[in-house]
Image (tube, rainbow, N blue to C red; front, side):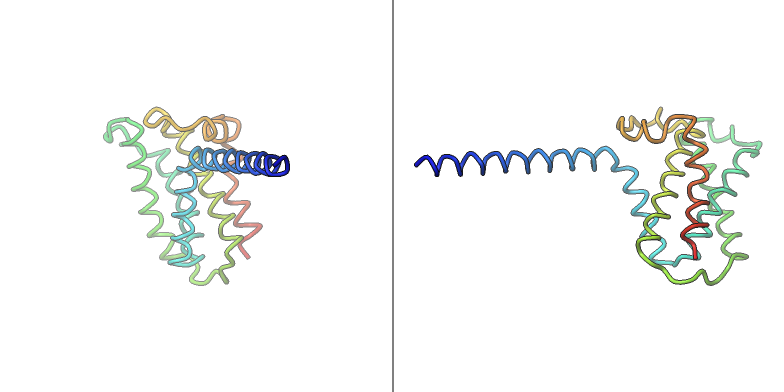
Length: 172
């Protein structure tokens, strides 16, 4: 009887630990859900249309931001964060069409792990850009985890160059 009780106590403790770990993992996934959706969308995009298209998209994110930052009619979008994001996305789409047309046609094979890392770095850049340039945190209350990772102004430079470093290091 005593052995049975000890086994049940161990089993219950083990199940409590598993439940606590699962709840912690789910809480972490819930906190970074927006970031994971961006990364997943980039991975699906790159798997569907290829690595050259992903590299063109990364470059067009930079070109779109450069054009957006000097665009004289941004106030016509209402000056709201959502309007600014729409203007930026139009600039990215136009620059993507241009970069894709004049860009390289072949960018080598697609290995999944470097591709996921490159998509994660690009997703981080997009999130940091949203915090720094578009004040998206005023539109949606992001979890504290994302705020700590993307909101500080001193991190913006590092997130800004992260995809470029990723392309240089992983883009062979």
